[in-house]
Image (cartoon, rainbow, N blue to C red; front, side):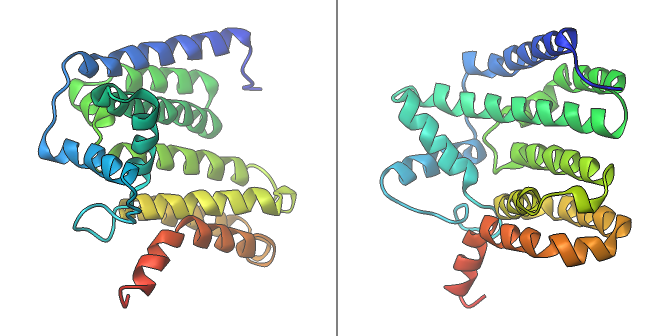
Length: 231
């Protein structure tokens, strides 16, 4: 059995603290490029009453990060640099958590800790890209690790034991991932393919409908935008 005990949770918490400290270093020397300034600017406009669906001048990268950044602006105003940096740190930590449980589910607890340590103490380039508010690229890591973790759990049990509300949640997360960044399409394709191969009849007859409904709701901004812009 690969269940986590108290010692495992302590080690996990320690590694996550190290990861947060490493990713907090840029907060000491805040800097912005034009790419990095886009999300904070959009968050500011959201606080002024705007409801954007996609990033400026694009129709394929959603504004989830902008709305979350607006919440952090509200909590930590007027320290905009701190608010933006904390959002990036939180997204990085969620990636590390989901990555750990994904690896544990697919391989083993021991390998999950080794992989987590390597990703936590990563090369500076990966740390910077995981920290920057740069067009939702850090959120791709979050959605990818979460969806593959959920998929791995589904593959280890008969589909008849998966509740429809739980699979609705899976579809909802898939929809949010697709709206946030269309680059997540490869994750959705592979997760769907693995599930379809395992139990196609049960998947299509029992779980497809709640999954599709969840996906449509999660990606609803995409459909609203296309419906109002002639697809």
